[in-house]
Image 1 (cartoon, rainbow, N blue to C red):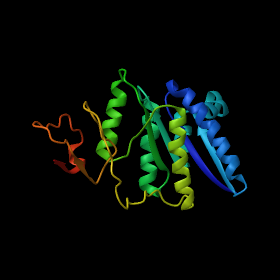
Image 2 (cartoon, helix red, strand yellow):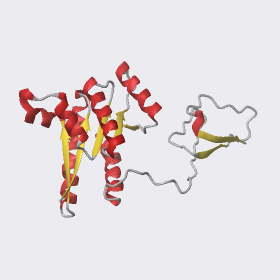
Image 3 (cartoon, rainbow, N blue to C red):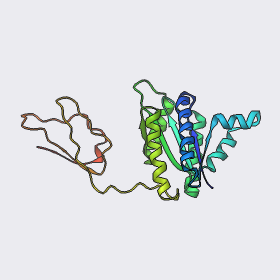
Image 4 (tube, rainbow, N blue to C red):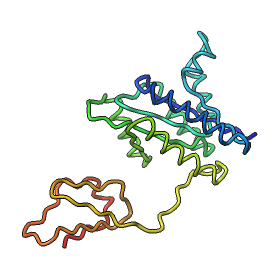
Length: 214
């Protein structure tokens, strides 16, 4: 039986998402069991119960370093211990190429704490990919695809396939339009027969190779 250890790190505000994640991992584990793959999930609720009064953050850090996959969830804040677990995961990955690291942040239109903003800035500077999600189902759909992708290479490497071509994206409307998630691509904007053509609020402009207005 091949065991894949997954460490899930998050703040307490995402407990419903953690609970659903645990359920989905269990279902996936049942699906893969006959193939000899067992998904073992470490979450802080279970670890705290097993460690009892003598538990410490160093024990959590040991679990991080022994994991095959490290998953971090964020919402409006990022706790000190979650940040420490991420740093340990990064250090272990640099040393051993494991664990593979995934970060997911729940969408919010409300205020966020400085700890989360600083952590996201840190990820951007590292060039680490950040995945937004809307709810528990969206989170699982994204991570489940990652599991299937890793399974295809027996969890030996975490490499996304190079895009073979870009499909056309049609955007219609007379108001504000947003094209996101498009990198290493040519973006063509056809504004029609208008006397005035403007493009306002273009973010991540360094990711756009060209924008043709015609």
